[in-house]
Amino acid sequence: MKFENNVQARPARMVTLRNRCMILTAVITISALILYSCTLSIHKSGQQLEFAAYPHTYSEYVEAGAKEFHVEPELVYAVIKQESGFDPNCVSNAGAVGLMQIMPKTFQWLSESMDKIDKRKYTEDDMYDPKTNIRFGCRYLSVLLKMYSKPATALAAYNAGMGNVSGWLKNKDLSSDGKTLRKIPFPETNAYTKKVLDNYVQYKQLYSTQSAPSSANKWRH
Image (cartoon, rainbow, N blue to C red; front, side, top):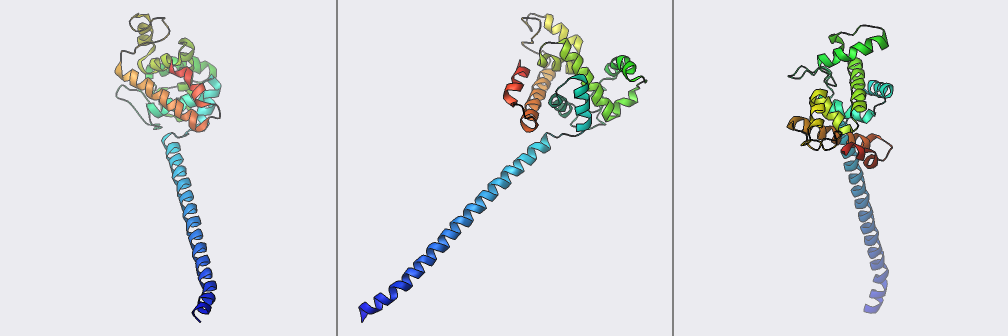
């Protein structure tokens, strides 16, 4: 009788065991799905934070100005981020104005050629206009990149001025070849150049289809 009871109970135990296995499998599967979903969500949130930290604000003006004066858009964004944080009303203690923090004297100097190109007269009030400020900033970057063979040197000139940088290049303690700055004597300009270069690399990695490390290497020298 006892044997018969065991035989009869065996199917029930097998059903119970099978149900437990199914439940365990379901729990493991659901847990894996939840973990995967959380991982995707964290990754997506991280990407969103990166894009928020390196925005493409004023992209229409940046793309147009960069194309007109043959400057990489990523470099323009990198400069704007460092100069003004994309605040069109930003004015520095030194008097630099707008998104790309252009000095009034620099704006006036650029206006001499831009007035002829556009057949109009620019005034300092135009410095606060995002489209004009970005366009003039792209023009200035273009001039500096042509004047100095090394991009990092051009960025140093954007911050410290052409006069200072040209003088540094003549100093053998600061430059061995008259083209590359071995050392930037102004701590502010040194930090500025590094930050803009870092911004540039980040913009390349986030937005450019071109290989960021290879295309950005030239800016490190």
